[in-house]
Image (tube, rainbow, N blue to C red):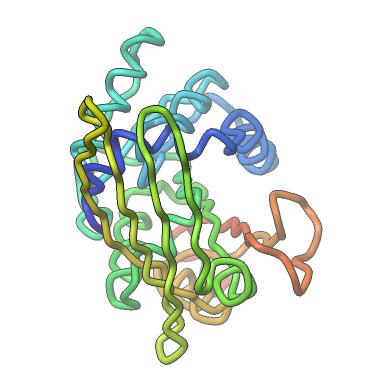
Length: 255
């Protein structure tokens, strides 16, 4: 995953449509089915920390990890304004290194799709497993093949805001099921002038078979798979899949 140096400045402005409180409560429902609070929760690829703050408000002891120091700078400011209490760490998820075990890991907002190599994704799952206690949970969402191929695909989105003018262009590569994303930021500098900056990253489609295979390989059992922040089976036109997995206790695999 790239460090979103310029994107971090405007991420919250460009994602105002995300209902972080509702997303946190949804994950909380899943967690409450299997764990008793309080719990230590890792918000993996936490970005600017909006979801981390919501989890903290629900009573979790939160650790936020992201590879972008710029994103974490925004997250730390927001956490401080809210009273602090969240530990933020700047780390590559494939090299995750925590101080102890966690009860649950949440990786939300299609962050899994941004790990574009299968080997890299395997390393992420392996590191999450290493620091998740037996019986602990790993919850994540992914954008579906339908969304990548029919919604994102070769679309272009324009954000005309007072603070920034942003052009978001997608390019779908069917040969490896990847959507390349180009963000161009035009930042007003006064007098009608603009400073242009760009970010480039990609999202990759991962099949259900691959994801469930990697989970099992890394010591997890799949507890549930749902579509679009519901508790219903995924429909063919679902845009988001939510996975819930549990770390298998050593010696339980063959029982």
